[in-house]
Image (tube, rainbow, N blue to C red):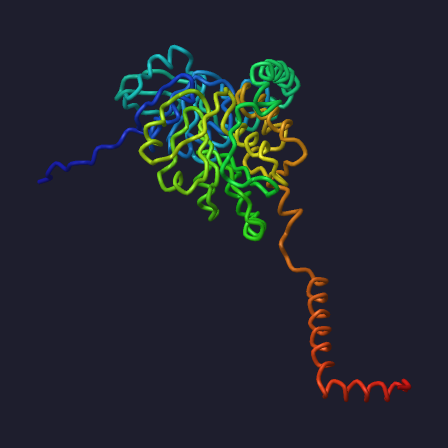
Length: 382
């Protein structure tokens, strides 16, 4: 006699998580948690935004717009895909409206389900497609540069006091004048840049100016932020970091962090500006007359500048120009400064040691005898 056997229920295929939707995307980033499915309406997802999604631990990203429009080679989609995040674009405005914030959903083969109910669908963007789009998008860089030039003109008109004259920039307690200053912003390459500069940082001990999102990389590198820049929508660092910093600078007119800082006994500087925290960090450091500015995570290439929203790209471009020739990109520092001991240094040190020992011996009676014997041997008349 056969008894009926129970089979374990088969879990539905796909990724299950909580939908987190928001417009604009920056308003969503602070609400993301590990395992969430981010629902965005963002043309040309940039790398800094994608990195913040990765840091939050999202399992999938659903975009109402194309991940890459072809205007320029944005790096956000490829960063997500290489990290194992499911990327779907083109769900449209209707799909965005259907995916209510806080709802639990399942994503499989480009389709979003609530249980067995189909909600919306889009195109799965894999690595091959993302790379092909990047190649095609490089042809759109000239048009994008023209757009950034136009926006830069408007930004100079609006922010000329800060950009051209330093009006509104704070007088810092931290000592930056005449020193090497390290400016750190949040980017995918920041931890590696700091790691490769380890010898330089250990020996030169620069003053550190860091944006709030970059503080994790700063701590991992064994550094302490002397100046912390907190931009609009960015979370306040923990109390230990704030107490250790000599200056805290808040960007924007919002008073959202004032109560928290007051409880810590920290009196922040405030800059009312539309520029981002990474741009303000560079401008604040430059205004204090440092000897050299080493920029980590700020990006030095044309693609790095273009791979941001338009206002952010224009701000980065103008802030870099304002900082002038003192800026050295962190990726160049290991080439310019290796910290290694060279053969000529060793030989010079040995020669100095020999001369010091010889001078010490020459002042003794034995040294005098040796000197007389040496002169006799070489035939020098005394």
